[in-house]
Image (cartoon, rainbow, N blue to C red):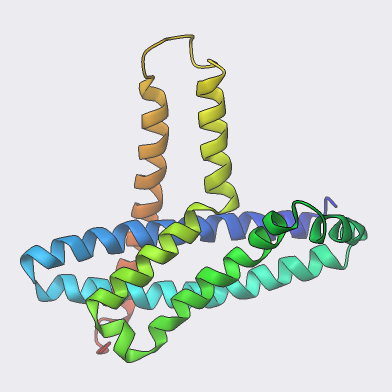
Length: 196
C-alpha cells in the first residue's frame, strides 16, 4: 500500500510521537528543577506542558485511528490474519496498542487531582516516556545505530565513536526544543486564562 495519504498520515504520527518524547524530557527536567527552586513560573510551565500534551494526545488518537482505518480497509488487510495470531502475535498487538496506551495515560491529566499534584505528573510522564521509547521511529533509530555500531560500520574504530552520541543527543534536543516551542506558543495564546 503506497497511497500518498497514508504516507502523510504515518509521517504525522511519527512526528507527534517525537513530540511526546520531547514532552517527557522537558517535563521531567522542569519537575527536577521545580523540586529544588519551587518557582511559580516553573509550575506554570509544567501546567502548560500538561495542557499541550493532553490535547496533542487527542489529536494523535484521531490521526492514528484514521491511519488504522486506511490500512485495514486496504488490500493489505490479509496480512492482519498472519500477524494477529501465531508465535509473534504479542509483538504485533503491542505495536498496535502502544499508541493507545500513552494516549490513555495522557488523558488522565484531565482529572484535576492528577494534573495538579506534581508526583502524579512525574509518574505519568515517566510512564509515557517508557511507552514512547518503544515507538516505531525511536526504537528503529536505536536498532539501526546499535546494529551499525555492532557491525563496525562506523569507521572500524575500536573505541567509542562520538557520532553515535551526537546523533542521540541531537534527537533529544530537537524533540525537546520543538515541544518547548509549542508550549511557549500556547502560553502566549492563553496567558490571560488561569489554568488551575
